[in-house]
Image (cartoon, rainbow, N blue to C red; front, top):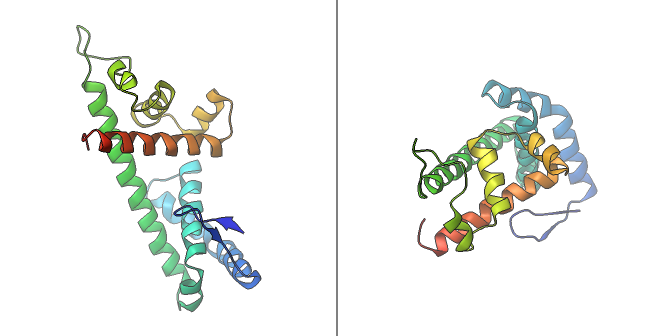
Length: 177
């Protein structure tokens, strides 16, 4: 039994459903990973997209079981996951660039520190902001960030997710979004 990422309610799969999802994974994960690679997503990013695709598949196991073409259904789920991933990355990168430009600049017009006002207003912590900046603006991978922080990649992904959520919520609360 796992947790549904959307509402925190437990996901309850029957043994046959678990076996069905496992069989789908074995049969189609290579093709799905290849599709993600053909779109430019490799390594950990492709693995994350694949994992999210199968989390959706678990939530939709009944529809998948009734589907005549489960691979086509899984490809559509993967497309939707990729679209969400790209929109989220673009939105967060745009927010971070806007926040970086909002502070004072040095003589050349560059900032190398996060806007202190952001921290004083208590929107997100300095650590969260630096993590987001390094991931989205510097292009650091989750694996690199996790190694620097001394945590596993799953924990790093969770920190990034929470930082994005806190930033978005704080900006919405302040009317900046």
